[in-house]
Length: 463
Image (cartoon, rainbow, N blue to C red; front, top):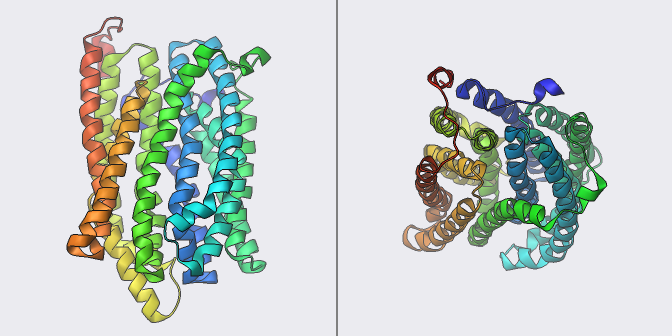
């Protein structure tokens, strides 16, 4: 286990960022694999109506899971800073306090999500012919919230310590189990949407258990009972970082749900085509989120070590890597997007063709604008690593406003095609805010005292 923990305050920034991000990327590939398999099995075996039902539930599902993921992600920033500073006692205290806060939040989110699922789906204009299936899917997924919280908390600890390989192995295990259970529950037992949702929850159990046993191997994290009841100061420090990240994810999802309510007006085939593309969204974003986690850990550790120039160099490297990656993914989607979308859609030839055209049009627009999304992730992650989760939260408000504004206004001008630009508009608005805020923050830090002076030999090693 010790060899997987990575001190990111020394060595080449390019090598560190890539070596951290690539296992996360591979893990995300497997995570997307079981998302894609879920959708493909539902779409091909159960039918286009079932695919639309899953799609109608997507944004509400994403909002709840985004809040669940956001809290431990924010908490891990403080862990990374203590680890970078070499303060293992405070690291242990932050882990203990985070455990308590995550446990309490999971119970609250579980109750609220189950109570609100039905009313929110109705508020989103979900068609009556898919309402029952959408609600069933959400009920089962939300029942697994404590499990999903546990996995995200444990994975956040590991990432804060520079270990991105263990979450990869956990995701591989989960993906394989999920694929197997999908085939068994949906194709074998004919449980439909319920089978796909159950397979996802069970797979998360195994990934959480795998991470748990690996976290236990980190000998310098020592949990004490007294720390499980965190002090006000520690609680405030963690919530100052975690709450804005969770709120940011929730805010972004509100905008997405407004978009979904507009999409739901266009009927089942439009929803199915849009859903097929949204299932590829995870593949478009797969490297961006991985680079984001790498940047947050990198910046957080180097902030703790007081290495300002190293943070700047790492960000330059991250931006170049992200732009190159987004260009490659863009090309692949433009060339092979229709083939990928065809995996999710079944029905009569007319239904398939109509949904496919809708889905590819949306996919092409997002692919061309992908570099904007990658810059958004890189600079949002950098600000979080610097301990600023407020501006990223504000960027969530910007995303929501842009997404809602474009979704409501542009279709009135150019018709239903206008809805395809809501996502891109949200990316652009948030990216502009985040990039400007990062450079303002770094300029302010460069004028402050207390930073270690990296020598010339060290700076050469950053390239």
